[in-house]
Length: 354
Image (tube, one colour):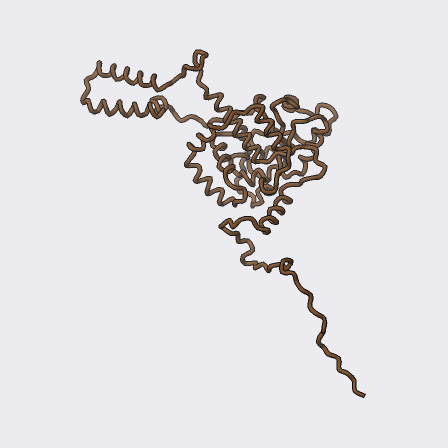
């Protein structure tokens, strides 16, 4: 009797593989290479952005407090600085606002009077030299540069002081040692251990800013580990005008590595090797150079690398005059602008506007 031979080849059909679910093999040689040309939106960029948001921000479903982006805080800081400079640079006179200390007319009269005095005492060697000198001085007066501006010694950099008139109060809820090593300029230390007290847990500055119209309180830590608990406790105790700085010191250093932080940030913030030279956090107020650096970083897109930001920063430092003129045209800070900041920051930041 003949027996049928069993075939070793399987007759079942192979399963179809969806090409969209198939992973593209990654070459380890080009794993860290990034494109230099922006080709637009893609799924890879979207997934990378989501991973970045999960790493830098810790959103919770039960948040009862409001958040503020670092870029929004920097914009508020620049507006306050512009308002401070406008107040200090406003000319004072007899009360009607028409008199100024130095004007083009007064400089021209002073120039002509000096020339008349010189001609009466000493002979003029040549009429052409006098005309050239007066013409150059007159051009300087027209351009706004007088003898006092030319001969005056260099002035120290202007600082922006934070007092009771400033519309915001910035609090660092880390311990005192971490605060003394590194913190955001103009911030004040308020350790979270103060919240363990049943009474007298508020500082004098907090009582000054608590639920005041046109004033807000901003709290931050290193990476959103202790700040959410502190803000939640203060909201439960009656604070309505309080915000938490999204991302904390880590995101602040990531997007504004210069001009915003004083001292030497720790390795957990910079994600780099510890520097050899440790600088103390001794700067208490912002200078004009800090504001210029913040304006340059604020104009650059957040997706660029630190190297590209640094190159643009070096290029932008040569155009400080244009940056200062742009800052001088910013609108004055008022209660209406504070309310707009409240309404904008009360919404969670969108994934592509961090």
